[in-house]
Length: 362
Image (cartoon, rainbow, N blue to C red; front, side, top):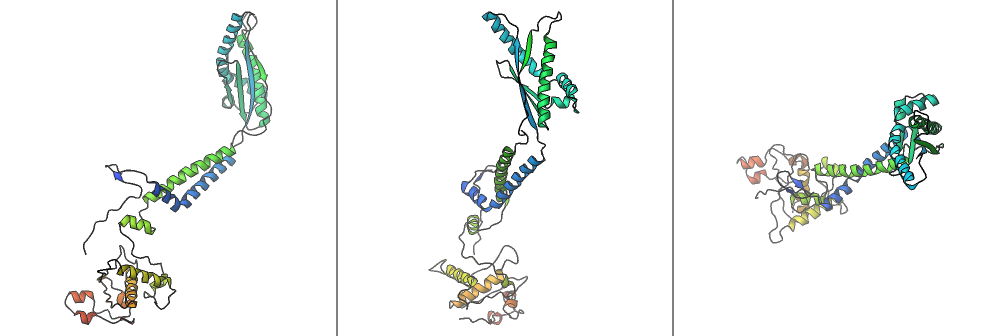
């Protein structure tokens, strides 16, 4: 028998260059997802549960908002009005910084008697303004909805006073700019943190992405053969037969071919037929049964292939070629003193080595 070098193919595509860049194969991708769907589902479930648990452990925060209007003293002409409006818009930029500053935070803490520091309050305050407007939106976050409203309103009121102090000239004349609380804060109904639905959807999306990635990674790293298609693709040869696993064969290697409904007997009959038709004009007369590692069923397969051939009126000689640990004689209740190695060394003739089994041979 001539040897043959088998090239193991990569189901994910062809590898080119030293780096081994792999072109993703869509069919292999779908197959990986189908075979690893449990991995994907478990990963998605863990991600969603993790997002839900994180949501439950997150302290709810309420947001209260106020709106401030900035105006300046201006004349009645169009030019004065335009310049006053531009002045207010320029002031808005500075005012947003003041609203988030430590001075105003400290005044608010002192006014309400809060048990937090001014820097801590600063982190909960945000002020924004749209371009080319004189409006400032102030938002405050707090664990209490009522306290969030009170802080937002008090901070806005204190800011009005602070602007008046900063913008009033030393001579006590009219301030150059003033701030009005155009919209006061009310008690928020629902917390803005945590965001339950977005968090769960994010967990779901991450779970799907991670699950698919993990499934593909496991499939790429898995070098085992699990189905007929993978075996044929890996070896580049067709499968002659498939024998179902039968744990009883460990105790009794030979099966009974008297039962026509036996699935394992029918599997060996099918294997026998396929072997006979490998080459119709010149069917094989010598069949070698081997495996890659020990205890994979070589002896059981050899015995039952021989029985299947004998059932089809073939004269069969079963040779135990395992020189290290021969086992066929034990399964067939034969004497193991003369074997294959004895014949090869000239210690016995072929006729002396042949033994009849308890099975009928035709």
